[in-house]
Image (tube, rainbow, N blue to C red):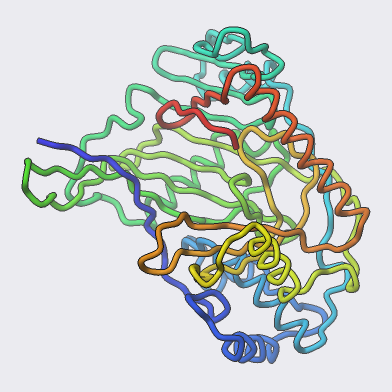
Length: 394
């Protein structure tokens, strides 16, 4: 038997007129007019809490909050509803001290003393702990890793993680998996120490890990699920965080037992500045910036379709020591049928204030310098978390 494993996101299907394949400018303006008729100067942005009331508390919202924020801003601009001070630039709380955090979290998760070690067990020779400040705690088959750069936490029960027996039909409903993930998230202790309240996260996506089987020269049978992951996404000021960070993911067996989790969450320390009406970049200007940048790079935009328009607070990846949190527009492009190319995701700050842009640029440069040092020292960042070991820079 040939076995092929892959992951598939199980997503709610909700499409805004502003986010679609080849949406026309007329359709965008019509959508903006419809949304604008429900806006008020006091509440120009719907917010995630209100959206959850509309969809249901356990509805998987996917990227709808970020798409909705984009469309609300477009409508407010069209109807001349002020967005003064509705967005801000924040300083993130610094990452936890990894050794102290690993000892405390291991006690919470394992309920017993565990072996705590500094550094990556199988890291490349010659790469200093300063470039890979991982702290590991182990007890039997249970493994915990704290990332000293970002405070990211990964936990797994290696005896059960990705070891579930595939089932033809998952025994629990999506709501039940979300409910169990939420209960675990509330009790596992990963939020309190980070200063993050449960109600600032929303159900984001449900992921099914599948096995497909086929004999040579035969069509694969229907896939069978062997694990489920439920991701929760962070909000700031009731607006969504976008990017690869800002997530709490809970991994469960088909029977709903927790086999691991990943936490990439940081709280806000303070407001650095509010964004004035004049400094807030419009959706049209943000898209024009992205299109100009892509065209200048030699990309033929006629080969792509704009499929995602989003706005939210942008978080970097799991290894980033990011310290500045700012709203960004995000635009996703898919290659048109017959075009061999990768999907594109482009982001641009939602502020034009030069001081704000200086903070953002300095933060991004610090992260790039870190990546360059790691690449020069060892050729990549070996990341062990919930899942297979992989080499990547995020």
